[in-house]
Image 1 (cartoon, rainbow, N blue to C red):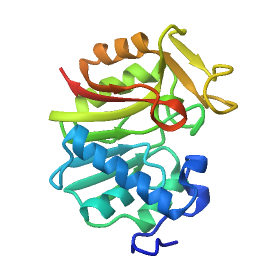
Image 2: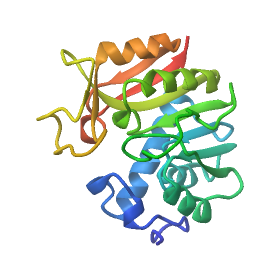
Image 3: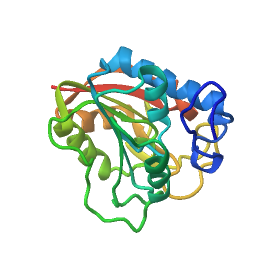
Length: 230
């Protein structure tokens, strides 16, 4: 599948994820390019950056990088869903673009995965880290552990762009909170919501600091954090 104005292959609908947010090729590319532009503005992404797209799915952000920059020094997409990585590796990989499957456990997307946690990144190797709608499907044990791994992976001056559900005056962590958000949450970890203070306690424990916070503006009401090492 190709966009009329682009030679970049786009994943078929079953690989898009994001539901109605990516209802056609134009919307898919527009959101991808928009996020790359935000990474440029908020996190200092340039053509010389190493970008880790953690939870990359079928490579939406890679399409945005190619449309906006042509390429950067290193785009690395990582996901725990083998079928999506297989499609991305066959259709989007090439010079400056690579994809990795990691068989780690997540109760929603890879319940039979291994308990080992990994970002598939060497310490200090990542200039920009991107995790969209990843912590929104994560339990309260994995969350602080992965924030620590993010801190270890970031290069000096690096930034992490992550989204999650956070609110004031709620329980520290809840799975599929009833009556919250625009959807009827079903199944394990469909929506995981943090009290803001609790998520930021995890951030601080990982020796990360909040550079930017925007409440409730992302997909389905998620909030945006831009993090850096302290």
